[in-house]
Length: 377
Ligand code: GDD
Ligand code: MG
Image (cartoon, rainbow, N blue to C red):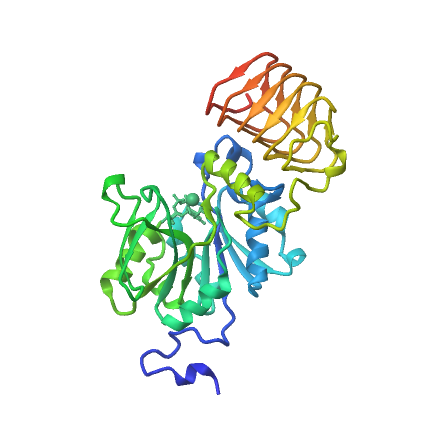
């Protein structure tokens, strides 16, 4: 007998049963404005974490949870995503893309893929790095039997996030998106992973942009017929949408707080190319790098493929994408340098700076703290 046949009247087809294969929707249509200039050429989901596009790490995590069917609502620089992943077969997944001509918002994007959704489905914000166990969340959802389950985490400052209030049984009572800092009712926030029953799609209006955080969750709570449940965990969690967070996430991976299965000290396919005199572990090194023995690389540093670090240069606490050149005696500390940029001899890159694709920093220049430098096109 099918478990669904045992559901009480009125709940038929409502509570996901253990036989229904669960699908996943990964929201990848945002413009990533807070990560500019990195996202001028690279859409946020393709920004690398330890030299692998972040979305690939998310898709592998989805696959490991036993989910094979993934829908990707995209819109901003979608070709970078579709050309890299194709039909998903390389990852053992069935991937389907739905490209939005204009952004439909976080719920509008779900309504727009409605025809591909067969039953309960995960929704993942495409910029969240977390070790939360999707299978455990699915089990929790099935146990509670709500219309949806929201993953929550506790943070020090909830104001940049969706703040969620729930009762002792986990029923969500309020959802407030990005409240003023002194008005946040709790420090439990929407961590950007939901498990929703298909009927949630019926509540989303079609044909216009709709925010799940500002419209749909508050409306589901107000209507009150079937509860939304909170699933709060202590797992590692970070939203990668800001440069500071993107840098910090790498440090957390190096320190082991976010498990990615790395070898401590020196890792990456190009680890043999880094002279021991230069390395200050931990570092992660891509293929084909040229590193001078009297340079300094590390700690907490990632080099993409084909980077060059010349004599006397220092690269610490920083992320260099592919093909970056750091000329002699230049210094980079707690900064991000996108693909093919060149840091001139003796230049200084200030804390928190972000250097865009192909940018040329002149020899001897001082780039200020937190500066954003894009190449002139
Ligand atoms: N397809 C599509 N279309 N995707 C979109 C759109 C759209 O119009 N708008 C945003 N997205 C995607 C983004 O690419 C991102 O993966 C995700 O939806 C969330 O958008 P962000 O712009 O990153 O939102 P946020 O970080 O300010 O806030 C959201 O995430 C927080 C947790 O990280 C909210 O869900 C908050 O409630 C939450 O706390
Ligand atoms: Mg975000």
